[in-house]
Image (cartoon, rainbow, N blue to C red; front, side, top):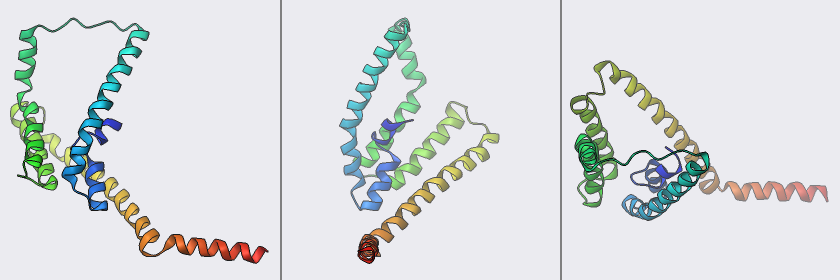
Length: 171
């Protein structure tokens, strides 16, 4: 995770910005694809030069059969973005609906296909998701309150008026 995950769709900042600014989330997602690819390429170039300077050697190239095996092993995980992005761009799902479908797909694949999620892991996963959601909602609500104070309540005008009155008293 890092700056790139905020650009490549589907990303939480795009959804939050789209809701707050009343913008089309689909258009925001489409606007992030090309910049995201450019950023990804730039990261690869930087990593290449850092690895070269640090003397990190190359790994042996995978054979064609190893590549096919890796794709076969990851077929379910590789299919999830097709469902998510295809559903959004195809107009089948709204971004809110597809977020739940993505979670459900990941959950089912993690439990039944890859068997990496145990029943005992479910409660800690839900609690971690609740904590993350609480932090995001706190920031969203705080930003909304700042916006409300600044725009609807004419906060900047009142602040300017207070400063003007203060400096006039000093003259």
